[in-house]
Image 1 (cartoon, rainbow, N blue to C red):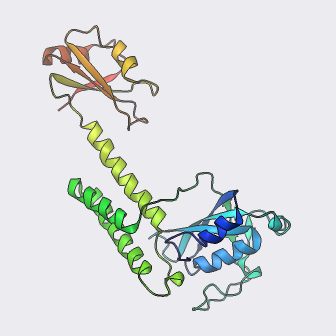
Image 2 (image 1 turned 30 degrees about the horizontal axis):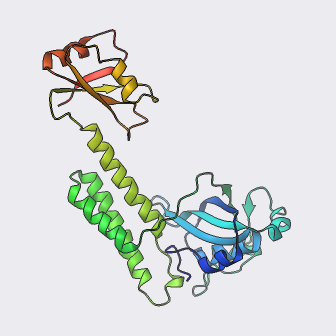
Image 3 (image 1 turned 90 degrees about the vertical axis):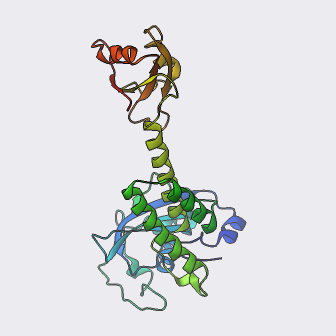
Amino acid sequence: MYKNNIYSFYPEFIEASGFKNMVSVYIPSIHRDYDATTISYVFQRLFGTVYRIDNVYNDETPNYKSVFVYYYENNYFNEKRNQLTGNKVFPRHYVHNRQIFRASPIKPTEYWLIFENKTMFPDTTLTLNEISNRLDVMEAKLTDEQELNILAENRGYLKELEYAENTEGSRYLDTTINIHQLAQNVKLMEERYLAKQELNFKFDYGFTVFVEDIPQEFKEPELRKHFFERPGYIGVKVCKLQKSKGCGFVCFDTVEDAEAVIKDTTANFKMTLAA
């Protein structure tokens, strides 16, 4: 099955071939007319068997896009690859038109700058229907207008992919993003929601103090050592999703106990009483 930006290219062929060494590269800017078929053909001639292509569109440069290409390296192409000038690839050397059904001549001077992609984008096992269900769950939880706008944007991507999946001849349809990118977007939305919920945490009893600037390696036992001898101490919690912030919570029996800790100028942490 071959569907641009929806599923992987030729998964049965790749599995049968036993390819193991997957490589990913980044092309920061190419004309948006270049569809997955053309990009795949150029890479097939130069590098190996293309597994997946991720497009990234930018409203600021509407005629261009960034591309991440995932392919299985084939030693047969090493000789051709060594003939490249730096990290430039001139597609005119390998294909004369950008699209099969819409001829768009490639100028001899056109080239792609190709860089190593060190952070490979994971495949997803979710279906479009499962992604739709997770968006429904998130929509029921969200109240932040910005996050709701992001969700609406991803709804548009979902409809685009559903249309492509259910359209005859969809192997030639190019979509704004693919199912793997959409699944990643949903995951990031879920993580942002959980992180926000975590920052709004309060103990069910006593008075909660929000603690910032704690060392990254701190867990509950390390944070507890700093507070368990304080009057009114009840318990601690370290934020697990806010690793870059280094924050947590401490619970005290009375508001006076909590405020006394906050006013302690010898403490190495920034502390505020949770609302």
